[in-house]
Image (cartoon, rainbow over all chains, first blue to last red; front, side, top):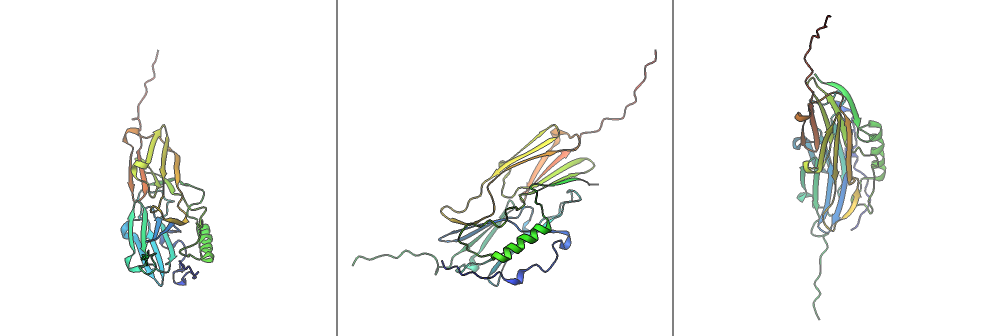
Amino acid sequence: MNATPRPLPTAFEPATPSKERGAARRLPPLNLYEDSAGWLVVVDLPGVPHDRLDVTVESGALLIRGEQAERPDASASWIPARFERTLALPEGADVAAIDATLEMGVLTLTLPKLAAVRPRRIEVRAG
Amino acid sequence: MITTVQTIPALRVGARPTMDHVHRQMERMLGELLPVAKPVRLHPSTPAGVLDLAAADDRFLVSLEVPGLAAADIELTLEGDLLEIRGSRSVSGPAGASLLRGEIAERQLAHTVSIPGPVDADAVSATLVDGVLTVTLPKAPVAAKRTIEIATS
């Protein structure tokens, strides 16, 4: 796999203060796995419901944005978190086939590899 | 009416903008590259789950972020005024896959929350929604006002 370092796209740089709309911005932790079929990204987004999660692909980057649901019963000092994370997409990711699921506050993204970059076994014929 | 009792970040780092900013800077410098050669720990102080304790007129509420934990992974006990939350989480990728970046640690969860008032232990309930555990502890009924007679000899 040819991993040429690329700079982080500047389009997603924060342009707003961290407490926009009373939310605290947090970088959600993630795990990243790779196998011959593709990549798997696991991101912790506790308290983020489906309708407040946004996953977009733009300019070769994957942008994950999620906001925690309001908690009317929380203490006055509780602030909903705004999670935001950007990942540069690897070379050879099949962007059209990205799959995302959100379960128990955990986002799981699968990025399959394009057939062209997937390892192929070449049959060797007897001469 | 909900009044603030206390908010306790589970680890010492909550959602502080300053640390967030530092992380952001680190991330910018290192570049969010995918894939990277080795597991990289970018967030040694990632918030491990924010704990909140609130008091309403008739109940206390404790909420804790527990992403990736099912109800069966969590054990709740109440002893006196101490609420104990225990759990464990294991994180694994597909079989045979290599970990390029590991920020989500396998972890044991252990919190002890001191509830600031008597509660009706039999009526305590808990819900788990989107990776957030909420424990509702109804306050114990206050003893009715009683007039005490003074015996005269």
